[in-house]
Image 1 (cartoon, one colour):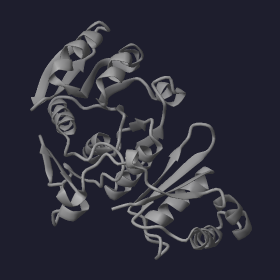
Image 2 (cartoon, helix red, strand yellow):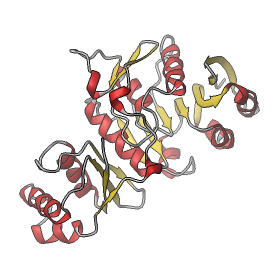
Image 3 (cartoon, helix red, strand yellow):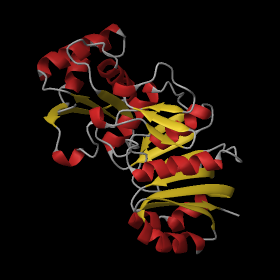
Length: 302
């Protein structure tokens, strides 16, 4: 399991190559458990990678500089100057939200199955998602994730969404489940946490999903990139009930007529206020689901 996190802010070309190098084993002594690159939205990109142990930062910088120079992305001198701004620190306790993956069984929800690296079947189906929870929410063990996947499964029985928003993506599990079935359909997977976005990108590569799935660091629905990508005909939102209520106003206008919204992350006693918030914005409740004390709601925009 990861114990240290590597972070760097740089350009897109450097960020994506560094994330690939650390995640794909290009550097034998620095093979990350998970890595990813993400757009900060201000012209810079971030890299995050998680390692099972501490590394020598000088050795790591020199090895990465060799990779960047060999690929013609940057001179060794320029690469080392950029890499000097990287940090490698122990993971904070607050960054852990997933259970030990050696204890995570396969998850089944509707047509979907979710596997960790430790319990992969011999052959993956299109409906299967391969994922490592790392430090983001959404490993699939949580009832709200199962409810979200079940809601998605039900919608796909009669609808063919062409533009999808996965709001609060965490590991990317919901958007990736959709993308495994419809790899050419745009999926915008957003989160406010950099480590979540990096994890979602890593899981995109694990599942060999095309870049129609895009993980994006975004603090709220006011982000111009979300508004530009709208209207969405499917929104998946497995987040806490308070932000779900607050987002009703700005979210519904971003949905196309006939669009579906699946909300989860709420307890059974919190359904009423979520239902009220979205009905007040003109949505129609399609279904309710529950597992133990957890609930999800599916809405449709007329």
